[in-house]
Image (cartoon, rainbow, N blue to C red; front, side, top):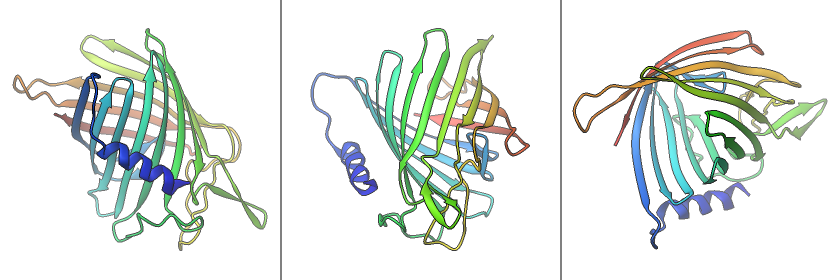
Length: 246
């Protein structure tokens, strides 16, 4: 299933755009002091490039992360989605591994490093938003139950509220894993965890802030920071970054 979705998303990324719908393209890169995802420490100082193409309510994009602190982390994600009004539905193919892992096109059930996630979300006009994200395919989405492994359907649900204080954009969010999300990557020497939860657990309480800084008329990078707590792991993060878009 991951292989089919991968080729569908890739075809959308390469397909020519026709018709009267307005086509918009953006690209950029973020530099972050540490890579924290949904309240979980993922890598150290990283550069994270991205490309996005949207036509009407449809969007496709690619996002990546490369560790700059010598930890050997590499990630490339492909995503496709549709937005209408405040409602969003999407699919994301996650692939992350070490720098020397040349297995991107490995899609066998017990060997692939890909994980496929389905997402639903809704955002109100006044800044309140909800999202539900569930891993629906991929060899990694398993957990150990006694002497056997079972699919976890690892899920992250979040409610967030965006607002502004003067010229600073702020987002307060609370995210949780509603059930067991222990992940076993079979076919590799290491076992890892996605959210590391067994049962309902709050994994992210965060406050993010961002502000555009005008350097020239055509160049305005954004500075951002985030304070995030992970009650499930009794951990805390303070992240700083800078974002460039064109």
